[in-house]
Structures are given as C-alpha cells and as structure tokens.
Image 1 (spheres, rainbow, N blue to C red):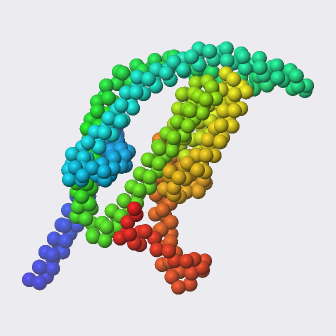
Image 2 (tube, rainbow, N blue to C red; image 1 turned 180 degrees about the horizontal axis):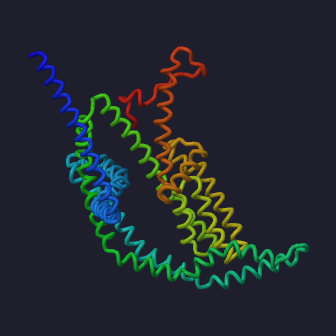
Image 3 (spheres, rainbow, N blue to C red; image 1 turned 90 degrees about the horizontal axis):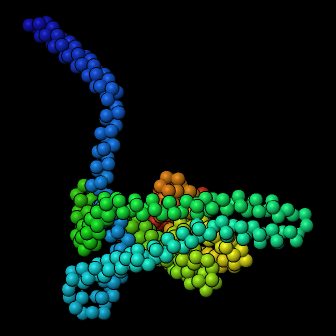
Length: 415
C-alpha cells in the first residue's frame, strides 16, 4: 500500500507539473495571438487612445481651469474677507454671506477689468499695431537716412554697411509687422469661432466659485482621505509638506503678478511722459515679460528699444536708460520687498529653472519652473542634510552646525 501511495503521489505531482507546462504554453500562445492582433490594429488603437485622451481632457479642463482661477483669486479674496471681518461686526457674525460677497466682489473686479480691456485696451492696442505695421517702411527709411547722415561724417566707416547690418537686425520685426493685419484677423476669427473655450471658461468660473466658498470643507475631506489611506505620522508629514509647497507657489505667483503689474504701470506712466511711441504697447511688453524671472526684463527691453529706435533713435537711448533704471529698481528694491525669500534661489538656479521650464512647457514653463525648482531645492537640501547627519552624527567632517529642518519639525507650521 505504501508503494502504491508513493506511486500515486508521484503521478499526481507529474500531472500537476504537466498541467503547469500546458497552462504556460497556452498563455504564451494567447499572448502571441493577442500581440499579433494588436500589431495589426495599432493605428485604430492609437486613434481610440487619442480620442479617449481628448475626451478626458475636455471633461477635466474646466476643473483644472477652475482650480487655477480659485488658487490665484484665493489670496485676494482672503484679504477682502479679513478686512470686512475686522471692520464690520455684521461680517464677524455672518461668515458665509461675507465669503459670498467677497467672491462676488473679486469677480466684479476681474470681470470689470476684462470688459475694460476688451472695450478700451484691445482696440487701442490693435490700432497701435496697425499704425506701426502701416508705417514700418517709412520708419525704416527715415532711420536709414539718419544713420547715413551720422556715419557720412565719420571717416573709415561705410554708412551703407552699417545700414545693412541694422536692417538685418530689424528684419524679423519688419516681417512680423508686414503680417500683423493677417495675424490679428486670424486671432480674432479663432477667438470668436471656438465656442468650447468660452464654455469651459464659464464652467471654470462657477467651479472656482464653489471651490472658494467651500475650500475649508474640501481641505478637510482631503486631509481625511490622506489620514485614511496612510499612517498617522506619514499623513501629518505629507500634509505639512503640501502646505509648504503651497506657500512657495502662492507667494511666488501672487508676488510676481503684483510686481509685474506695478512695473507695467510705472513703465506706461514714464513712457507717456517721455512721449515715447506707442507707450501702451511698450509698457504691456515690459509688464508681461517681467513675469518671466531673470530673463523677462531683458526679453521685454529688446523689442521696446528696437521699436523706439525705428521711430526716434535719440529717444531710444533714453528709453534704454529708463528700462535699465526700472530693472534695477525692480531687482533691488521692489522685487525683494514683494517676493522676499519666497523661492530663495541663486541666479544660476533661476537661469537653469527658466531654461528647462521653457524647453518643457514653453512660456508657462519659464514662469512656473522657478517655484518648481525652489520646491525641489528645499526638499532635496533637507534630504541631503538628513543623510549627512545620519552618516556623520558623531564625527562631522565638515564641522557644520546642526539645524533642524522643517521636515523634522512638522508641528512648526509656517505663517
């Protein structure tokens, strides 16, 4: 009986082994057939995936836009809410109506500003661009004559060669100006023909309203989910670090927007006093490009100086000096006052952040690349510090003073 049991057990083991081999072979053949079918229908599968991604983006984009609107408007809404609660006893007792009023006040300011831009600013910019594009040839000929008169009085310098060099430098502006009417018509046609963008924006405004109104409840639900899905210590550390990232992005975005607005207004006032040509366009270029850290002031200065050089070369020197003074004022006084140490990056890291962000995401990447790098730098430095002190707790070969990081003290929240 024992021999028969041993034989039966060995037979069962052989049957299981053969069954596994048969199953593996069946799975391999099934995968080969599936692979062949997939290869044969790759274009259709790719089209289906692209259509699915496009549909998903159309569903998610209003929520992403709404979150972005709410995130940018939240500091200003909180400012108004604090002021109303501070000065009006009624607002202290009725927080929800105060919150709704502050949100509507912000919407009124933003929508009113947008209407003002559409009614007054856009037509003026369009007229200025059209006037500049129409007279570009006259400006270029007048500048060539001035340059020729100046360099004809200087021996050993060929004024024609100087004109060729300057005209070659100004050729991109002349080409863009020549196509300005068609570009403006194309932009206008696309803006008014694409109704989906308008619909998504309207939906985003309503979504942002509810996000701002119920932001505390949303935050509590998010905290509850984090604590439910992880350990208490890890959840507390994650939420603390998320708050630190929020402070970095919030301080930088709001501060940089306010800084660029002030710089644009100052540029418009001074350029108008100087009687520079097209002061609104020049101030708009300077203000918008100032949003890009480090490179922005230089990017904005080049077209402003070249446009002035075409129309009034002596005034271009004064405009260049003014922009230089404005940049120094922004970099040494206004910027540090508003931004403070919100990013705490050296110029080398800022340049690297702008270059990588621009290569990955274009102009938007050039802007948000700096707070992203600042976040990476903060957590990377803390990680290196922790590894260093764990390895050299007693010897300390670099003779560094131990500083406890914010990650080691999550209970100390930033103000």
